[in-house]
Length: 132
Image (tube, rainbow, N blue to C red):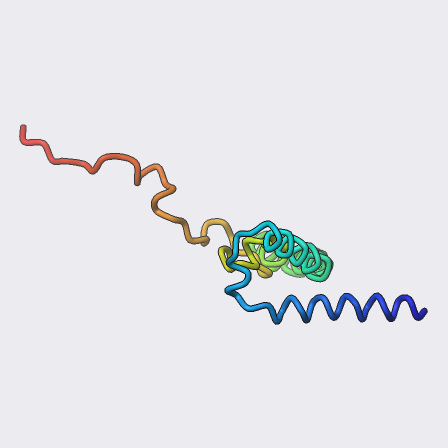
C-alpha cells in the first residue's frame, strides 16, 4: 500500500515539475530536451488517453440511445457520436510544443481548417482570360 502511495507521489511530482518547465527550455532542440518532451508526452498520454477513451465510449452509448429515442435518425446519432469519437487520443510532442492543438472534442473533417498551400488548387497556375 505504501508503494502505491509513493508511486503516486512520484508521478505527481513529475507532472508538476514538467508543468513548471518554461516554454523556452522546451524550444531547445537538444537530445536531452527531445527525450524529456517524449517522456512528458508519454506521461501525459497515460493520464489523457483513458479519459478520452471513457468519453468516446460514453458518446457511443449515448449516441445509440439518442438514435433509438429519435426513431432511427442518423443525424441525431452523429451529433452525439462525432464529437466524442473524433479527436486526439495520444498527446504528442507537437502538442506539447504548441505546434498542434490537442482536440478532445473532435470536429467533423468538413469543418477543419486547411492550409491553402496543401490543396491541389494552390499548385495550379491562375486562370488567364484568353482573347479569341
